[in-house]
Structures are given as C-alpha cells and as structure tokens.
Length: 444
Image (cartoon, rainbow, N blue to C red; front, side, top):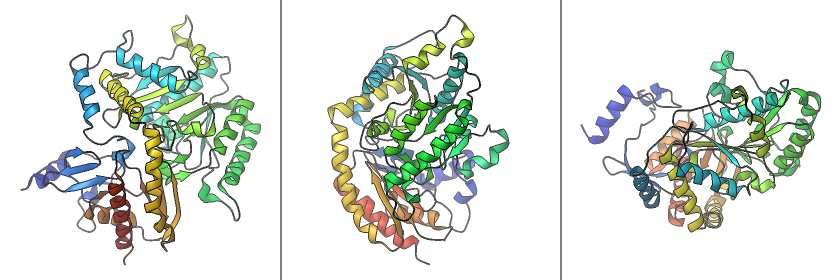
C-alpha cells in the first residue's frame, strides 16, 4: 500500500472530517477524493507521492503568505523557547500585549480593547454576548435581539447560527437556536432591471431603516460581513451599504458588529474591509488570516464605551466569557509575524497590483456561456455557473484536482481566494486551469 493509500484508509477509519458528508468520500459512484497532504510550500500542497495542488482557497481562507513561510516559522521557533501558553486570566505576556497594541493602532485607537478566543464562531459569540450584556449593564435590558442579513454566515456554534441564514448549516438545529431577525441583503447580484450596486445598497438600507424604525427598542446589534458575504456564494455589495447601516445604527441606538473573520487582513484591498466605507464598527471580529493560517486565533476588538460598560466593582458586571487557550502566546506570535510581513513587504500595495493581474486572467471568463456575475474585490474573485446539474460542484472539484488545483465551489459559485504570495504565473495557471475544469465539469 502506498503512503497515500495508507493515510487515506486510516483517515477514513478514524477522522470525522468537517463540513462533509462522509459517505461522499467512500461512495463507489462519483466519490469525492480525499487528498492526503504530506507537506506544503508557498502556494503548493504536496501529497506523499509528490503530486502537488495549488491552494486556490488558502486552506479555507486562512493562509496569507504561503505554507511553511520562513519568517513565521522563525518567529514561532523563537517563541517556543520563551513561552508556549499561559492562562490569560490573571496573567499577561508580551505577544498578546504587543498584538493588541498593534491592532488598536491599525484602527487609530478607536477600537482599543481586544478580547481573545480561538476561532471565528467564538468571536461571533463573544461579540453577540458583549453587545447584549453592554445594554444590560447600561440599564437597557430590553435591547436583546439581533439583526443579520439574508444569506449571512457567522459560524456554526449555537449563538453564531442564530445570526446565520444558510439553511444547510442551520435548519437541523433550529429547535436549539434563538432566532435573529433577517433583513434584506445588499448582494449586487440581486439588482433589479436597470439597478447598479449602489442602488441595490440603497434599497437594502431602506429596508433596514424601516425595520429599525419599527423595532429598534429591542435591537441590541446588527451584524454584517463587510463587502462580501463569503459562505453565501461570495455575495459582494457596495461599501455604501456599510455607510448607511452605520448611520442608521447611530440614529436608532443599535450596535454594529463587523464580522471580518474572512474578509479582513487585506483580502478586499484594504487591511480592514470596513475601511472602504470610512466607518468604525462597535465590534470587529477577526480570525482566519490574522495568524497567517498557522494557529487558531480569533479576536474581538471594541471601543472604550463598550469596555466602560463592564468596568465596575461588581464581578457580575464584568465580561466573564473565557476559553482555555485565550491569548495563546504562540498564536499571538504568529499574528505579530504576519503583521510584520504586511509592513515589510507593503502587502496592501502588492495585493492591489496582484488583483489587477487576477482580473486580467479572469476577464475572458466573462464571455463564457455558462458564467454569470463574474466579480472581484481585492484578492477575492468569483463567478456563478448557470447549470441545474446538482452534481456540478463535486464534478468541478474533481476536475480541478485533476489539473492540480484545490478549489471548493460553494454550490454553483466558483471562487478564488489564493495566498498573497501567488505569482503571476501561478495565478495564470490557477485561473486557466479552473476554466478548463469548468468546461470539463459541464460536459454531459
């Protein structure tokens, strides 16, 4: 048995893989291949037999600067000799302090307090609980409901599912969930005849205004994924919606949570996506790329006003949420190394140049007869495929793998979210290979 076959057999016997119907990996007909990865280098992943796959999705949107990045590796080796982890309740350490200070500086000090956890869903839970508890501490306990956008996704823990509107993740657990209220999405694909993306944003904001006008007394917060609703098929909207939403939240005394777990850290063309709307949220959720794709880390950043609502002699008025690995020193050190690379390599400027290269290679797909809504914002690009074949996503996935590409469609949406270290040549290979995989997957 080859090294690949041995690892596959052992994994199928012992590992329950996430976001997966496990039978799809073993069914005799049109099985989804499980890829045994032995090592990574740059944008490439290698199996035990030397076959390589271009990581076109940054390993679930986390990897920014390539696998086995030498600068992040060196920082972690140094940190391993100093401190791996210590309880953050009652203790502190240099990596968590420096990371908090540097992130605050990136918001010009307007989000000056960082609360730590391990994953994006936990960050969502923290922001929701903070918003709820802040209103309670301010003597406004009636403000306990939440708003989210149609098609939103904010994680799969119970609280996060309450503000998620993707049926396949949510419906099975609906009896467990305290449902949030859903308002229309500004997804530009929903444009009516003659509308442009800004007009779609205005229409969605008008619906938000109407809802808040009627129900604001009970609403604690609105949560949004700025600019791109990723799990909803890379639904992109104009920054004008964020500006209007911020104005409405101020008018109606509703807190604004920006979930930048997937779209932060340079993905959309600015370090924080909400910067393109020139607004400040009350809570900012970060995860995924903040550690460069190395270690689980999530952060909720918030304002002095929110922090002050919990600052009291009474323990019960404090924010008592906790995780065992909160503020893990190794994860924070990886994040600091990631921020160093942003500065040293002028990554935001480099990404803007790379995004233009991507756009050039993507342009021919716009005239493909099955392609709809070709779109891009920064280092995220996507298109929808006009097909009623329910097997298309799996067929495309297999055809992409056959061409050495790791791409996972979201339904009929094919998207690209590669590491920032991808070269122009690798970018061409990625997009041209995806076009060939598309044609092959559409064959009857």
